[in-house]
Amino acid sequence: MSALAGVTRLHAALLAAATIVVLFAAMTRAEAATITSIVVDGGQIRVTFDDSVTTARTLVLDGPRRIALDVQGATPGKAGRAGGPVDRIRQGLYRPDTARIVFDLARPVIVSDLSFSDGGRQLTLSIDRVDDKRFARAVGAAPKRYAGTGAARTLTAARSSGSVTVPLGPVRRLPGLPRVLGPAGRPLVVIDAGHGGHDPGSLGAGGKREKDATLAIATAIRDELVRSGRVRVALTRDTDRFLILEERYGIARRLKADLFISIHADSAPRAEAHGATVYTLSEVASDREAARLAQRENRSDIINGINLAGENSDVSSILLDLTQRETMNVSSDFARLLHREAGGFVPFRTDYHRFAGFVVLKAPDVPSVLFETGFMSNADDIDFLFSRAGRKRIATGVARAVQIQFARRIAGQ
Image (cartoon, rainbow, N blue to C red; front, side, top):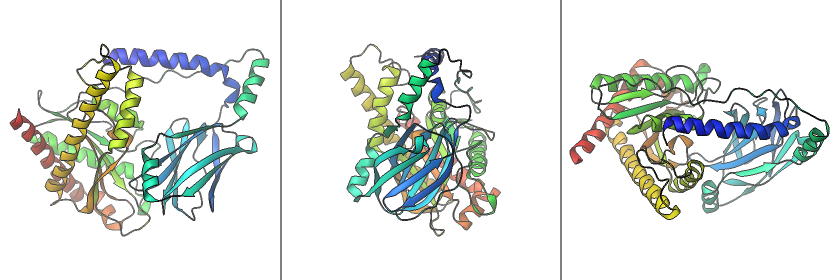
């Protein structure tokens, strides 16, 4: 499926969805509900809003352990009060119309139930303590989705009121592709500066923001790679702008990139935590994403350059599985290479290579790593990440690893 065909298909799907949205117009309000409180009380977490919400989902994440709560039709608001199994509570926008609340966990717990009350103005999460094995299974499970009962009552009222006119904003188009620097014909590396725009990422002492560190580091890596003349380079963003997660790896796929590196800076409850970490996609997350992609794309051009539309389900699943597993192997090889080559320039954690289901790592046909360059919660790491000398050292280490990665590939051809 060409990029143009993909855009056309996406627009058609969104327009069809917009027609359905009109039927549910009375369920929505001009302004989103704002979070007014978050309280952890024993085996429950209560989240209240200044207006009704009707849809939410929860997912369990690892590296570090956390639970994410996505609430559609809500925006971040008042800070929460942690306690019990929850070390810290963070808020942000997962999408323009969806608030994400992240509960960093002191011990493994899962959400056993979620209920709506007070006319949709309060969500109550019931949480259960579990062992490590059950928590790991929850990490690999699909997100749990919940809907309040207010939707059906509102829909009935909407149908009895005659016609409803809802202003639907313009269809969100795929972002324009960034410019590519470097000699034609060379391998292409896409560098992703994490966070941006209204999403500052982790916050450090003195008002330091992760989104500023990641952009400066990504730019330094780009410049170092361009100077080498051995690869082509593109940035997913070169300004302070917001991209949803799928757009980030989507840019790499549309450019047919040979390597994708997402730059981030970690955070931890303990100030002594420090050093860099490299994440690659976990096998469980890979299998789940493969199934989702196959369903969404109808097996058409899921693998760059290979059209699976004419294949039966078994054949296309096997081809996609083989492609993803090879991609994961290459990603893991590069993670080890990055540690080896950058270790003399960047301090790494002892357990430097970890596996997780980060969305930006889920391109099935582009080797991808998420590089946590240090900790925003550590004073020494902040000094390193926000200094010109520190960024230079990170860029030098990454550039060495990238050049060796493609030199190996060329030698093996």
